[in-house]
Amino acid sequence: MAIGKILSDVLKERNTTVTDLARNINVAPTTIYSIIERDNMKIDISVLIKICKSLDVDIEMFYKDYLDNNDVLVLNDTKVLPSRIYGKKIDTNASIELLLLKEIQNNIWETLARPAKRVKVGTKIIFGDGLLMATCLEEKPDGERVFQMEYQGIFLEILEQIGSMPLPPYIHKKLINQDRYQTVYARDYGSAAAPTAGLHFTKELLQKLKKKGVEIVYVTLNVGLGTFRPVTVDKVEEHHMHSETYQMSKGTADTLNLAKKLGKRIISVGTTSTRTLESIMKKYGKFVECYESTNIFIYPPYEFMAVDALITNFHLPKSTLIMLVSAFSSKEVILNAYKIAVEKKYRFFSFGDAMFIK
Image 1: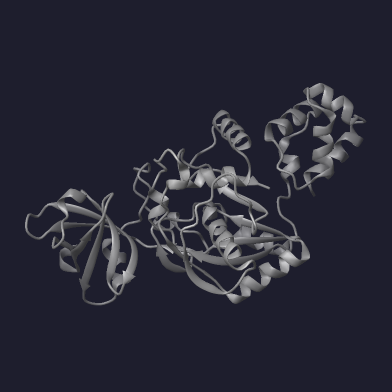
Image 2: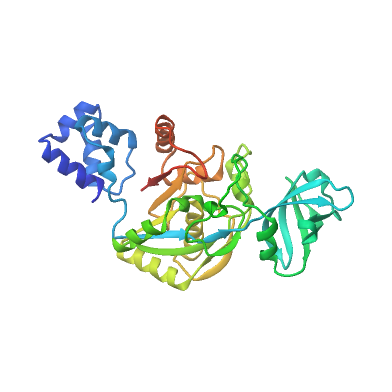
């Protein structure tokens, strides 16, 4: 049931008028009417909290049913590579860490090296007692290095032996269970980071949503270097987004196009799913089967063409992710949401809590 309908029912039950409620919480009556009459509006959570206090109801009653059979949920099914590997330089035995970002040609990888100053063109690094050797082919800015990989056997199996999950730098505790950084629906290896909004979904929850009639479809965006880059320029339009590959199947495209035609809500889980959907819609004007790359950078003001609602985590300041979220809602609403999150001691970032914006 939509928030507006629930509020209307509560007012009738309490024999309270819109004018009385507006006076009690010090807002204009039009604010209350707009919530009742426009169920898909972006509701200021601070107003809703005041309403709940005034009516002596739990805010959770407004959110018992976030999704229904008029919704299509879009998930990013990429799988995180165990792409953080530690090795030794052959000539000096110095320790080097590589984060594998993207295979740009057969066995040639774009990486982040640390410490990068020790890695020059021609540097050879050995990993896993000789299971893998990497030779630096190119030096790029900001610690990026391009390596040729040499090994015997299957590369992924070697990575599973010698690699670890590429956790964000603010997470210092080692994961005992590596799958903790994978979504339950992750399918094909390819990402340097998890689409973390999806970590909130369990198999049981997805099954419940399906039983309610929510359609669930998948896209794939392989998360790359852009996730690790804060915005440091004064003018946001000068920020450079790295390209990431994405894929949409014909089945997903057909489902989403029909949803648009029928007026159903398309709910994107995470910024990666959002960037995929908006990239395709912006390029083709509809959803199509494709396997392409995108460097789309979404920041205010931006007119969303594909997505009607968004489930996302609380992101780092100065990140492209928080700019996307602010573009979808507004700077004021997001700042207020963060203020409440701090007050309520919600968890932030990759393993943190999520918000639902509609």
